[in-house]
Length: 284
Image (cartoon, rainbow, N blue to C red):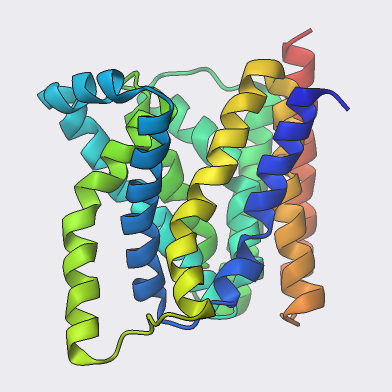
């Protein structure tokens, strides 16, 4: 197997296994998020150190404008992580998978609105189909599908902010998490002081700490993959993650796939196929 293809599949499979990992941790979604942010920062710094990238990191840290922009990006990527962990730990894995599926379309929509990027007719139609799928859920459930919308929205805004600054992936991730570390570190000390924390020197403690490493590993393999693969291949591979999420949600954790959700999924998959075909044609 091609080395880049292996790294690409590995990264998206790891992201697809996140429901299993976060389901296994005992603790509230806010506690799990706190450990994820703090230890992601620690593990990224260790990797930067051993990769001899400290000089690059120092340049970013000393640039006030880049630091401010990455800190803002850090807020939105942390929001994305928090919504995902909340969804997994509260029986909304399928809602999260819908968010993952429509994530690329959110990027395209924000790109058109804020960066004046042109959308092809098939892409506009695909975005319309997603709107229809969401409205079906709104009418049927009499409520907005918060997770399915907020998850991709937070990540698309994060991507939009990142477009304004050119920073290497690892150094950028460190600054993004660093900006959020004081808040979450204080939260960890608070819940431990109150005696309501779930950290202990056992498997659960390892999983809490490992949440930071779990964040870093797929990012590293993905960065290797992007150096070897074209964007079309990566575009295809990215659907491994929501597919695995759907499988775990239905067959492992027994979430209900009712008619409304089934119709929504079908419409969204049609939108995904349309944009994928349009993307391939556009690159020929």
